[in-house]
Image (cartoon, rainbow, N blue to C red; front, side):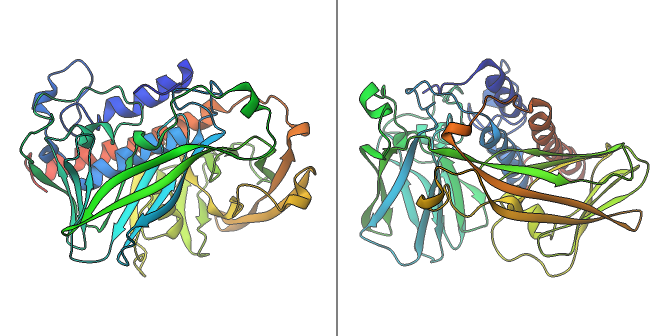
Length: 408
């Protein structure tokens, strides 16, 4: 199930998946080529695994897309959720598309009754409830759905008819996975490519069980032509120090990369107007209670009310997802589709050694007639991936020193 990626995309995704291999026998740090049978899920904490998964997902979300029209690489093709049948009041499912990766499914279950997601052989591979999340290590789907590239090996113990072997994945009541069964894998015809409206390509369905009740997560795959694109752009950046640089990386949620070699401390406010991060001579400290940090790490639930600072790294570079720059829809109103317009103005409050500095921007709609080929900021994307992956590595090593292998 290999998705279409450019060589540069493949290098970045391989970088993330090599450090924390999400399939191929486990979730421990297990570089390709080593004996994956020694890499077991119990060897790494849930938090570390989630951070590593966020790194791979973040890199994929920020990559420019291929337009091959097959193998899941077309940015015009996306999965749409229609219904859960029969509906379950305690269960919600969110489907998101970020080609060339398969669509991501995020399921939440607020009840004590288990929601079981069935795999490729109709065996349960996930069990989600208010008590937490469990995964079935003898299910092929358990490994494949955690690898966005689809290239990791499935261990021999995972096969049709195998007895389920459940392991605890999280204490939360929500889980996200990549779902290749909702990915279009056929060639898009020239006639469809010429259309100016959305075209339904076909249905998809994922079987599940809620307690003893059979249920189905249903949807369809749609081809949506490019009518334009959203672009976040900086219009005001700090001018007091040439060694303080701010960059924007385009994505569904725009990314911001700050490099501060000024020798001064840059304090950045989050979307709640409270301190979110400090970048300076000592490196980066983040308030892990900040909604902006939780957005970047895709942490759900209610954020703690009190700030909690954590030293992230020694280099003065910070990257995060900036929801203040995100337009709430994929496109503007139809009356604006053919116009180059500013849809959103945003700002990020910050201080440099206590003095206020400006970081301001706009999010624009550029119609298809105005699109040009722009160089993609690979260094910025690499910085975002490296910061997030580096955070996971640091946390892993810290916890390794504090607890024996297998501690949860």
